[in-house]
Length: 135
Image (cartoon, rainbow, N blue to C red; front, side, top):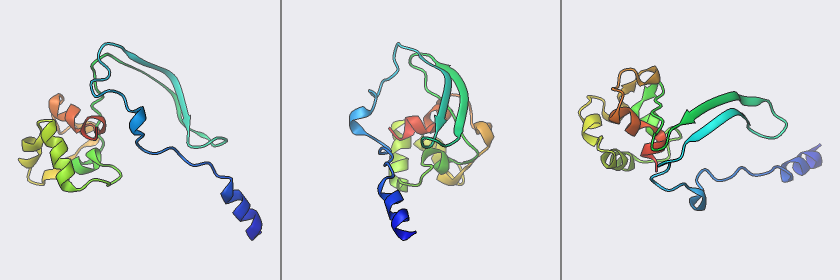
């Protein structure tokens, strides 16, 4: 049984890196083109059940996705906890949001309601989106 288990583990394919520097889009992407996704289906590995089924969306050129999840400012910016506070603050500063978050009593640990309903829709929401902050 041990030999069979070792054989199984030697044949597991590796997942790609979280960030592949030579595969990142330009910082101003998308500018003019639209992104249309139709019936997206995703699974974690081959031969496993779908985890996303039939996702369809359109993103206009120059538009970003302001998606906030219930939790904290910190968990929305850094969901896998790989950045120190100073790096998060620098990202907020680049997005001109350092003062907005610093003015909150709990700072990076300020609560975010589901869908970010307790934050204004606009620059704050867009900048707190993971895609904007971590680039």
